[in-house]
Image (tube, rainbow, N blue to C red; front, side):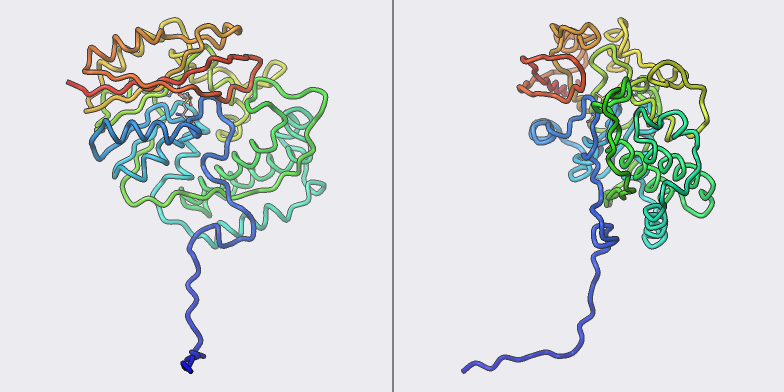
Length: 359
Ligand SMILES: C[S@@+](CC[C@H](N)C(=O)[O-])C[C@H]1O[C@@H](n2cnc3c(N)ncnc32)[C@H](O)[C@@H]1O
């Protein structure tokens, strides 16, 4: 009979150094967000083509939105550049992508503290007074406002990465329970959601290479940008992202703005020319100024949408023409039911991917 050798010496336990191991709550991944035009469901398709058609080490995502395209690109490319006009997206990129070290224990302590607070003990604040009973259940809004104020007061106790992990966690946790179809143009008037607020941590991305983060107009950034592959995913219609996500902008900035209208919007800022009649002109200017080896552009075909605000601003032929002036362009397309979150019902939706090898 074979002898079984039992090793009774105590073994050193190696604890997985990830937020997933503790605290005992599920963390939130970067894709776990409702965002108009998010490419989360198209990543396999996009990267199947990009990896085949393009060669290089650096990838710039200059209309990055949620950042999911960059998160996928980070698996392949050493250098990632993210950019978007919105303050809330800028905060999110620092939470998920910034390379600074952080103290997990300290971050967990903030989370445990926030999750132990009873909203009954919390006073009304800017967030609950304005958005409570509308975009959020009043108790949830009290907690969200309290946490945001506390993060502001205690910023000195945190480094930049820790602060942005917590701020991004707040943005995601709040957005998850918002009483909306997925953006802040309007809220459900009849049924206020009573989903409990729980402060959940994001799962920051572990990445070995370098990451640069910007909040600039892509057309200005184009003048100083250096990357082998530039991915361009602009807004497709007249819907301004800074207006649709104004509550997240206010939460990120926490600047006590004067709010107006039924949707309680902050004053206008970061209005994109890609949502205006001049979209083709600014797109041509962007392409002209890019110094890169490959240009990858996402766009879709909602020209015939019943809602005028959902109709495309740039013709597909125009995009191809502009790109052809820069180099040989291939076009790929795919049927795709996108996240629209509005009244628009558009059956024949197709997603386009243009890939240009620059001359
Ligand atoms: C279609 S979304 C990008 C979605 C993103 N690829 C994703 O998967 O989440 C377009 C983004 O462009 C940003 N944007 C609009 N105009 C811009 C500009 N001129 N410069 C930089 N970003 C801009 C918007 O804030 C929005 O997040």
